[in-house]
Each structure stands twice: as C-alpha cells, then as structure tokens.
Amino acid sequence: MSSVIKVENLSKQYRLGQVGTGTISHDVNRWWHKFRGKEDPYLKIGESNDRTTKGDSDYVWALKDINFEVQQGEVLGIIGRNGAGKSTLLKILSRTTAPTTGSVKIKGRVASLLEVGTGFHPELSGRENVFLNGAILGMSTREIKRKFDEIVDFSGVERYIDTPVKRYSTGMYVRLAFGVAAHLESEILIVDEVLAVGDAEFQKKCLGKMKDVSSREGRTVLFVSHNMSAVQKLCDTGIILKFGEVNLSGTIDKVINKYLASGDASQAVYEIAPPTSIADMAGFTYRLQVEDSNGNLVNEIQVGKPWQIRVYFKLTQKVNHFIIALGISNSIDINLRTTWSKEMDLPEGEYEAVFKEDLLLFATGTYHLALGLSSYERSLHYIENVASIYISDIADANLDKTIVRTSGTGLFLNPMGVEISTAN
Image 1 (spheres, rainbow, N blue to C red):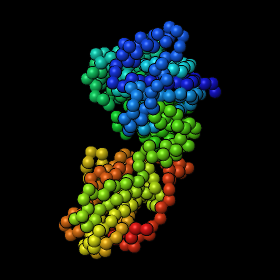
Image 2: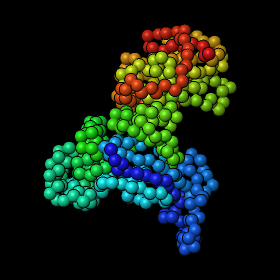
Image 3: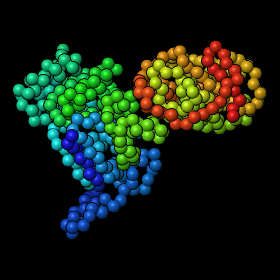
Image 4: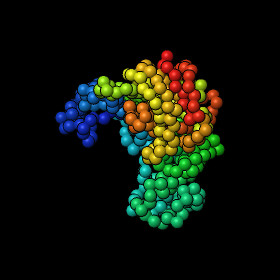
C-alpha cells in the first residue's frame, strides 16, 4: 500500500489572549527577522499545551513535532484527553488552518466532519448543501446526482431535504453531514468526535459505514473519539496525543492499552480528601476503587461483565447499627440503583467494603456514584458524584485493561451483595 498522508515535523503555535498571531510589534519583529534571513524569534519560545498549569509564556504549542504516515485503506484512531491537540491536527489535515512549522503531504480529496455544520451553509436547503459539498470536493453534478439518493436514505432526512438546514436539529445536521462526507467520492475521510451527538443506532450505522468504505472501497479514515469501544472496533492503528506531542503510535490494541493504563481515560482509583473537620465525625471515606470481579483495577467495565466497587473508610469510634450505601445514577442524575449493607456494630478502625454487581446490566455510557455512611438514621459522611464509571461494549478478550492487582477477603456477606472487612 502507498502512503496517502505524510506528516513531518508538524507544529502549531498559538498566542494566548489574542486573535491572530500577536501584536503589531510582534509582526514587525517577525518581518524584520525574515527580511534578514533569520528564524522567527517566537518559534524559540512557548510552552506545551498543558491546560492544568498556569505557565509563564504567552505562546503555547498546540502541536509540537508531530510525525506519522497513513497508508491507503488504513483506519487510524487518534486518541487523547481534551486539549491534547486532536482537533487542531485534524483541522490542519483538512486544510482549514495552516501549520506553524512542518509539512503535510496528502494524496487525494479529503472529506471532513469536524464539528456540527462543517461545510454547510445554513440558509441553503439540505439538497443544495449536498451539491455544494460535492462541488467543493471537485465532483461533477452527474457524480453527485448518482450518490444523492444513497446520501438521503442513509441520513434519514428525506422529509426535510428541501428545508434550510438552519431549521434542522443537531441530530439531523450530523446525519446529513456524515452522509455527505461518507458517500461522496473522496479518498480520505476525517471524522472528529461529532458523532457523539447522534443516537446509538446512528452511531452504529456510521461505524459500519466507515468500516465499509475502508475495507471495500480502499479509502483512508482518520477517526477521533473518546469512546474506546468505537475506536477498538473500527481502527487498525492508532496514535496517542498528549500535550500536543505523539505519546505512542502502533497497533490499536497497544495504543488503547497504554491510554487506559495512563490514567488519561476514566479513573480506576479515587482518593477522597477527609472532611475539613473530623473531630465530631464518627466515620468517613478516604478511597474508592473500580474493579472487575477478580479485584483488578479497571478504567472501563464491559457490558454484561460482573464488576465491583471497593470502598475504604475509617471509623473514629465504635459505631452501632452501621450501614454503608452506594447509589448509581445516569448522566442526567436519574437514580438507577441503591445498594446498602446490613446493619452491624463495628469498633473503631479502618475498613473496606466491596459492592458486587453481577445481576444488573447497564447500557454503554457514563454513570455516577454517590456514597454514604450512616448509623441508625444519622448520616456520618455522604458524598454525591464521588466517582464515575464507564460501561463499554468492548468485547475483545485480548484487550487487557488491568492496571494492578489488589487483594482482600470479605468477612461479611449479605443478600444485597456487600462485603465488609477490616482494611489490610
């Protein structure tokens, strides 16, 4: 296979707090150095794009010395936490922005779906926008007409195809935009996280289409997503971006394993700061862990697989009729399940409780946990949104997401599936 995308020493610099590259004095300084045949002085400064730190420079490198190649028919997954530079890289590859340094060599036409409304004119109808996008890609009217019915059928907006797209819902917008990008005859398809706004059925449809255009039509696909299940199913190879630099590239299983183990994905361990004043508190929680049924820490939980939540807590005095409870809610804070231990009398000390879940099946998505310690009807320590768990439909037995093995044997077991033991 031949290389269709070659990225060499690619970097993109931004100036904070300004529109454009900087002030007039900076522009004059740049011109003066260029006139004398010297390097741009502002390329020698700047910091990595770590949004968690304040920094001292007005310049940041959204991308820094990026190098990779993509072969014809390859499906490349680009993953990384928010702010890693993924969208900036795709914008450069789509030629909607220019790099500061380095080069990008692309063979073939590029169809991009970077954000809702990319390439659409809001005043034009869906039909007119299909023809407009095709013309931008260099296709003839005959070629567009030949694909038009497939696009409309795939997007499911036939009733509104002659309505201005400014009246479309976000889902309708994305459906038609993806239909256009996937069906018009470009050699390279670039898709950002925008598919996340579609419903589950449409996302599955889009993933199938991207796989089809790659395997059957030999087209190249670049895919950005935070959904590791979708990335693992669709992509052959991948790269991790971290602070604007390539952290790892290789096979998709290798890349996903590294990303999940790095802690940049969903967490497996949540350290909980004790209350500011614990003098009058009989107990408090200090750590929560997400584990599989064998006690291995995991960042994601597979649909249908048993899992458990391990909670470490401390009692500062003897507590009678002690109860620990765990609540699970969905992304819109609707409570789905509350599990609690049986009442018991516990002496002062450190304990761990294990909530085992092997009966309730959750759909793919993010869920939030609430945790409470109580005695009789008095609350000892209650925390909302103490942690989040991500349920994934990854079903590859070879994909090992284990970080570290923990151990511990429960001394008490009740019908609600909660074990409590003294902490090791």
